[in-house]
Image (tube, rainbow over the protein chains, first blue to last red):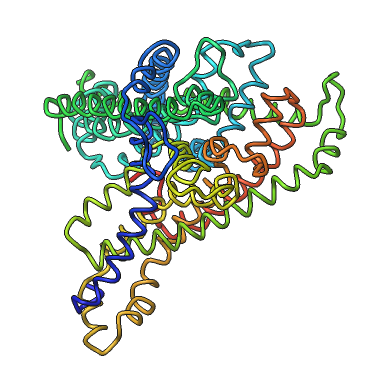
Length: 269
Length: 282
């Protein structure tokens, strides 16, 4: 408790409420209102319509939504696999390698996503590997960008996990593969599902690298939202963004349910 | 006897031989998809369109006024947004932790949720909030740097608030009570007890915010102000709007140098102090 008198707390709460409303609540409320508005030329939006939401779920926009979901699923899965592998392998690696590789694995956070996209464009528009113009370059960009986060999530969980379970299993004669499959991975499962959730959320909203590399037949929803705003169709853009948020939320809920179902049957730390 | 000996020996040998080999596959992925492209960006920046090695592109890009404006904008926006995030994030954290009200938990979660959103969402809603036709009708504010800064503050405040809030939960309530009972006024307690305690966490969050705002692209792209060109915007426009790869690569190299320098500094300072609150993961 910092302020002991009740009357002195009110001004602080009022200030908090005002800032919170302007900074956090207003943008979200406005987005929802815009997605459902026919027009907005005044302080409040005009008539109510679901037409924008409807158009966000049909035609090109629907295709983009499906592209985004598939990209997030593939990139998220790959990132969790590679990130977990890296975390486990580096935990057993010599110190110099662990420190160096840890820095490298965090590098995509420090590098602008646009540059990651540009790099892939420059590197894979030429032999030996021509990926520019295919959907693979989008998937790779997303993998690189979310890998840091899934690696960081799993490796920080690994430092908190008691290694004695794995040691006991090994001392009882379990081979490394069995220890990994029956002890280490089940104990890491909560972290892996958290990593997957983070990866999916980030991938669904990624725009910087995607806009550099996407081919016409693999346009993610955020890029479509940008083309909509660019053409002045801001209401459709707001509706598509709302759909994007909804789809992300549903994906995360499903992911949460799947991993919860799994952890109850597995070994819980 | 021999089987028992083998069973004990096998895991030991397996863990001794393989660490380097096991670490290889993820590093190959990273090398192929991140390091190799970055190296080629560097090479491309000194190669002109006919494949000749030259520093001509560097010279012309570095001399251009748009590049100077982009650097100025990038640094100004990132600096101002970070300062705003530090002030606002600290304020939010202090109120939520030390002057709690019914529903403060929900408010903290709401601020945290912003982290899961794409940053362009903020920019998009700003077009309705501050656009010429919209809630506040502020005219040209939407297309100014200040609007970009405000949008970035909105989006990045949780990056400071979260570590600050975590640091505040470690602050014993007795210490505040003792300070107050010795006659310190709330302002003094805040300045002499609370802020020094959370300063490392706030600094770590602020450093991360600075790094992320230097690289921010979605917000600037969606607000789409013609005069507010930042380095990532320049990379985008040179790379895929005018298809001038060498120039885009020059700007990219400058950007990466700036970001990596800051990132190494950040790792050096905060890893040592163990300010885990500002880590990438909650």
